[in-house]
Each structure stands twice: as C-alpha cells, then as structure tokens.
Amino acid sequence: MMRSGKRKENLDMKHIAMQIKMFVDVQRNYRNASLTSSYVVDALGISRTSLAKIMKITMNTTFTRYLLECRLKHARRHVCLKGDSASAEHIAALTGFATLRTFKEKYKEKYGIQIH
View 1 (cartoon, rainbow, N blue to C red):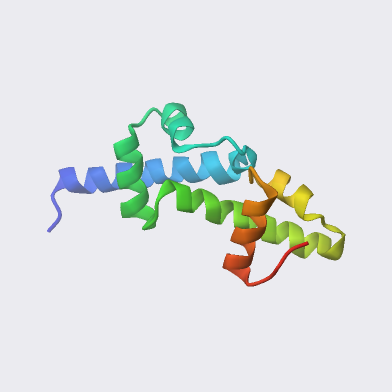
View 2: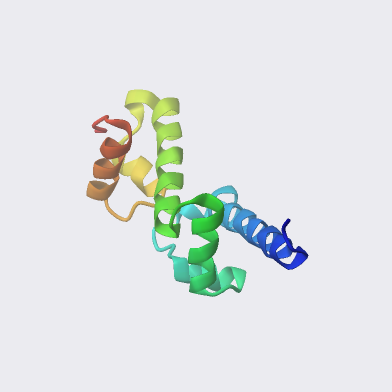
C-alpha cells in the first residue's frame, strides 16, 4: 500500500509534468529555438534535478528528447497541411529548429522522409 507522502509526491510530479507540457507544447514555446531546460526550470521555479527526475518518471524521457519530439510532431503537421508548398526552411523556423540541417536530419530519422 502506498503511503500518503509517496502518493502526494507522485501527484506533485504529475502536476509539474502537465505544467511542462503546457509550457512547451500548448503555449507553443517549442517554437523558440533558444528554449532550453534552464529556461523551463526558471519559468516553472523548479530545479534541474527535479526537471530531469520528473521527465524520467512521468514521461520516460529527457527534456531535450521531449522538446525534439514536440518540434517534430508540429513539423509533421505543417508538412501534412502544406504538402509540397511547404518549404523546409519555413517549417524549421516555425517549429524551433536552430538550423535547417538539424531539422532535415531529425525529420528524416523520425519519419524516414527527406524533406525539401
């Protein structure tokens, strides 16, 4: 049986995990190419250690990986909506990739499609 302290800690972690998702994805901060874990911990008032622990326990990933997956998910939506009329440069900029090269490389790794 779970102790009430452990249960509260799990609820707190889930709550903070939802705040992270809201901050990065829903509020569209993923579009900021300069977004880092430091920015998130400052915005949410948590430590880097807490962020890493929460990401690992509640989402089974790292912040960097979560951010990449979020950016790729939104890039995929742009590609699907715009089709051939979408330029890779434009999509990369809209989804927070700092360089076109990184965007193309990560997109191909994830989806197996070379974007132009």
